[in-house]
Image 1 (cartoon, rainbow, N blue to C red):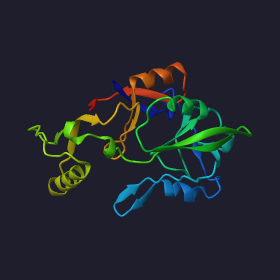
Image 2 (image 1 turned 90 degrees about the vertical axis):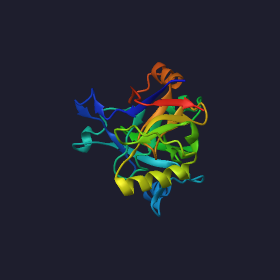
Image 3 (image 1 turned 60 degrees about the horizontal axis):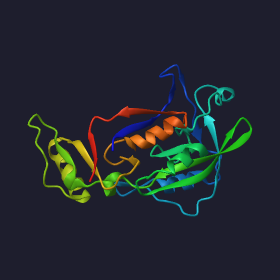
Image 4 (image 1 turned 45 degrees about the vertical axis):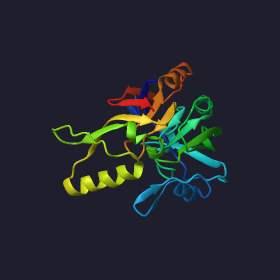
Length: 232
C-alpha cells in the first residue's frame, strides 16, 4: 500500500488569501474540554478521550481582518485558532467524516459532534481527535533509522517505543544529534495514520486519497513522503 501526506490548505490558491480557521470561544466550558483533550503531564503531552463530552456548540470562522470578511470561504476541513482543541486534531464536515469512517483509522481516535455557525446557520461539523502518539502503531524492529552523521550509522538495537525514547533523548542530550527515519513499519494496514510524536505528518493510504478526491473534499492537498512506509 502506498501512503501520502495529507495537509490542510491554509492559503487560498497557494498564497493569494488566508483561509478562515475555527474558534471555539463560544463553546460552553470549551476551554476546559479542549485542555482535557490535550494537556501536559510531567514532560509529556497526554491526549485524553472524553467519553461524555457534550456537543461543542458552537465554533465560528475567523481570519485576518474584521468579522464581516471571516465567512468568505467554507471548507470540509479548517484549522484551529483561538480557543480550540489544538493542532493535533481536525475540524471536519459531516461529509468528510462519513468518508473517513469507511476506512481504517489508527487507534485511538474519537469524533466529537460540533456545530459551526456559518452565515447565521449552525452546521454539523466534527472534531476528530487523534488521541495517541504514533509509538503504539509502529513496529520498531522492522523500521529503519540511523544517527544523524556522515557515516549513515544504522541503529539496530531498538525494538520498543520506550527503548527508542530513552536512547534518542540521551543521544540528543549528549551529542545534539538526531535520529533520522528512513522506514516506518506500521502494525496494520491503516488508511489514516497520524505520526505525532515522531513528526508532524498525517499519512493516508492511496485508496483513501482516491475516495477523498472523488468526493471533492475541499480544503486538503496531498504530498509524496520522503521516507518509506510499510505494513509489518
